[in-house]
Length: 501
Ligand SMILES: [Zn+2]
Image 1 (cartoon, helix red, strand yellow):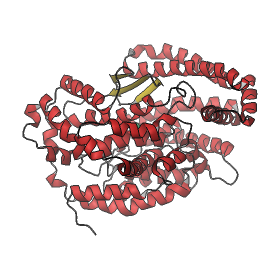
Image 2 (cartoon, protein in one colour):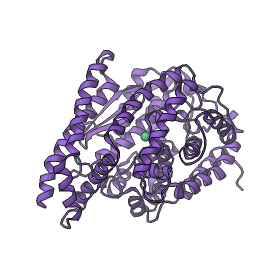
Image 3 (tube, helix red, strand yellow):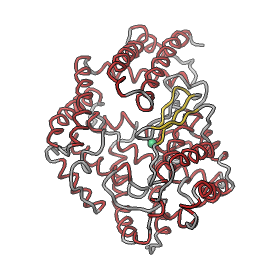
């Protein structure tokens, strides 16, 4: 092995241990830590974060990485680790430490100001903090951007390399052109989709039992994974042998936890399938936010909301809830879990409307960072777009511009990953169907061939291959949003019995 890489390995192991400790504290805070522990625990987390920072940002690692960048005897996995660490180090070093500290302090303050403002429906209280935050985002993007690059493109590139405005503008334009009218036609026929049967009382203890079974059914390995409860469902991992998901149960909305299980399960299976040689290195996670979301959305929507998936699973659900679901036929159940309904809240949106929520945020971010939209004009601009694209207008900012935490954290350019994930999923699904009889696997209750395909083409590579390359190699072509448009159009035209053009 390359001597420098050998030396770097001990630094990598240290970073992996510190990051796992931070992840574990995070997990604990979200699931079981007592409320009064937060302040004192935060001090320890602060110490660990400093150690983590120093483990990367120091002269020895800097010199090793410089030499390794020139090395020609690294394996692809080692080269990926070097590339990722160099990028992280460069990003940290471009920002003056004093400004970075001020930003972190603002970030900590901004999220609590935002939470308060949301609770009180008081955008004016949040506006000055948001303006400061945008100031920092633009400043930092200015340090990072390549020559001639726009500030927003520099931000977008941080989250999803290569998916800048040049790719996203035509993608969202296509969504606007095709999906907005499709949604209007579907929504006009919503009277025949009565979900009240799913709003009966579904005992939480039974839901937990069913969801545990369901997680195992789709391939979540309980010998290497844990399932707990939290306010909002999420997935986290220490390494590929310890992947954790959470869920949240609602007594009168049985499908919520079911689709969270399948969604987070999709994220988790990705992490469990990363190659052993990569786990516990910086290249040991999913390729990008968008690629990760493609795996969860594929499981949740393409598989989990299909008729074929529920053929063997619905009888099992009925066994748990015979009184509630007794007279609801499989066909009707599948119709109800696919109902498309314009709404105000992104996180509660259905498969058809979800990307329109993301499109609105994309348009606004672009204008805030690269254009001349001011923070004062933001609520009005937000509401106008909801009315234009979804046909609903928020009555207050809590249900409007204040709903998401992201901007208070300084995350601009992250939202598009959610929409891209859906589009990647449709493209991957199209390619998979050429190799596999996907629906037949689902009907037989055997998801292993599907998981094996994903592992072989995507999961095992971790971050060794970049998202765009993975997509190209797994599907045989570059990113093509047409698959997503076709998938939605075909599915909802059939579901809503719309006339085809
Ligand atoms: Zn997700």
